[in-house]
Image (cartoon, rainbow, N blue to C red; front, side, top):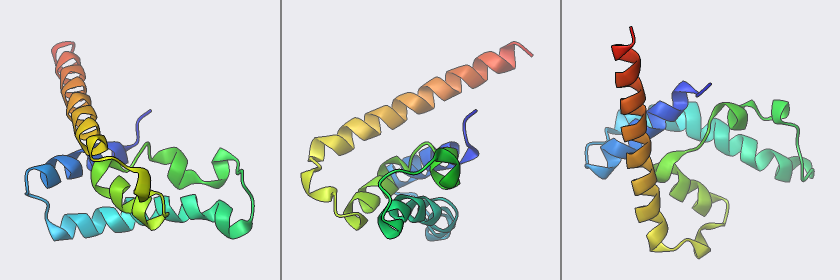
Length: 114
């Protein structure tokens, strides 16, 4: 089952892409999704363990991704942004748009079936 956070991240990316992202919403997503996710990503580095069981990092298990808005920030925070090409953003935005269309079609199909 998908996490509700996935839909929040997709919505946040869409709002950001259209210049409509509210700072209060960004702060809520940062506190509720981004920070727990980043803490879970940093945990192996802090504990000195290269591997962790999925149940030890519930933020990673529950959240399928951060979306383009927070992924770029996360890569920078983890020191991994230097190899990210500008085409990545375009590809990620296309993937997000495709996911939105798919979700809308599934939802529309579910409404018809009710």
